[in-house]
Image (cartoon, rainbow, N blue to C red; front, side):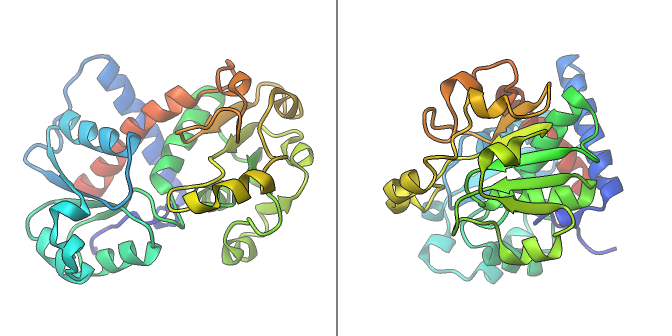
Length: 301
């Protein structure tokens, strides 16, 4: 079998995804019991960051440390990528030296090119189109609190961005309904909406989208690289803030997720993000455990 990459959630089968989520929770318990698990001893992860990060960098570095391995942080300023070396050449060189490559970048095509020319697993730690590592943590968090998502309704409120696109893949794999509440012009990728129409629909009214949902999720209105659109987007998304009133439309016991960092008073009110229904801090922690499970899956299977 050839090398396995993780560029989107669809690189996993449903059974692989569920097994990985179960493993993430098991690894979380091992860590809390202070049990060593050095399965990646003498393994090295190269981490290429073209977009800034807190949670991604800390979680992947800590994951490799807890699994007994090592990690190398690489920014464009530190590498020949920043001076014009082709992605293909970087992939060929790095994959002769390290055991896996994690990339956080802008265009999704960059990570696809990296994977085509890498002899070791390439992991998508965020592109403009997809954020599958965050979805692993989100799904793990919901399962730990409420069980299976199959057959339930998830409401996404706000920009149809990379997170929303990855939620569409999750809805397809796990067979839940995803209702996307967004203003015109800010829908998720059109191809995804067509391909997965059985599991996803767009609803302009946030209250209708959230009604009966077991999970409500959102993200910032302007992602990295969209800072120049901040004011325009504030106007477009003014009616798409997740407030207590909006959460009251959801099903009893509904959870709130946000991949962070959050802008309190914009996409979410402070009242909601600090409410017991919000599990964003555990969601952030689960980036660590889900990525440990992913690294173990890609390097030890």
